[in-house]
Image 1 (cartoon, helix red, strand yellow):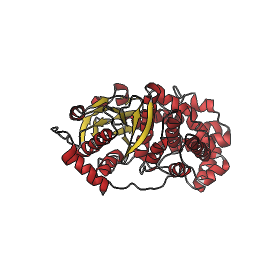
Image 2 (cartoon, rainbow, N blue to C red):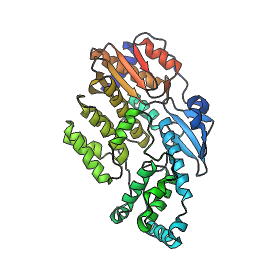
Image 3 (tube, rainbow, N blue to C red):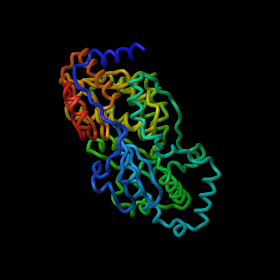
Length: 401
């Protein structure tokens, strides 16, 4: 309640006099205005011409021969497009011809007989709002996030070594073994069983995938982080290594445990975030970021925050960060030059009431900490209204970061 009153004070009394003009959200946009040509249509896919934006993230409909996918965020769309190429490649392999119907059928029966793979359902958007929009709105209302559950391959598959084979095939194909793409998971299942029982080599599996060299990346810095992660390792091993890295960087045992046990982060996502913090050497209070990440309560919010960690790492690698600090339900950093840095991996950020409230609160914290310069980095773009209002209150905006 105290925090809410403080934020209301900022909104009603303490903010500079600015003509706040809010954008209408949600809105529809043309996909052609949001994406490069090679992401609009390809051999395996087409993106629906209409894109829904909830004020923060774009929500795409990806059409393919393998079904339609609702995809939250441009970066996840890149991943899904990459996965469609892998699906097509797997479908080109005639498993029955290579190993005989009995091997394939036997593998399918064993898989069906064991506990079925538990994968998170593909992105489902309730109404038109992503988890990111919800997070901003909850920040305005000062609500509390909650925990839920996540699952990987079942114990039976881990016991017989099937999961290990699937992870290895996924990495060789350049896709995330923990992807929520159900069409991809089904094909990885069949491919992995053929390899597990019939000796299908990685070369045969990947030869038909152009450029099967790794999970799609969007920048050199992101590529550096992915190189730090061995996704062929068992999830339990990744969690143990992540915990050890957190402790080594000064994160307390309790904070590390809470974050590691947050089941909304996949093993790959958790490892990516930890790698970003681990490579941000010399940055003080990385525990603040870990505690912030531990409050994540949705899968798209987990994806958002792991990319946020990568943005902070990118800035640190190129300019230098001094340390992190919490800002209510968000996180910020002090640069080595003494500026406030806020990173949001938004697709297209609009000036909504919730955004205005959050950014004014950042203004107050910056003033309290004596930070005269404020930098906002976004992965995509901001609306003209958002750029105008932020500039009026002294923010330097860096888009396409």
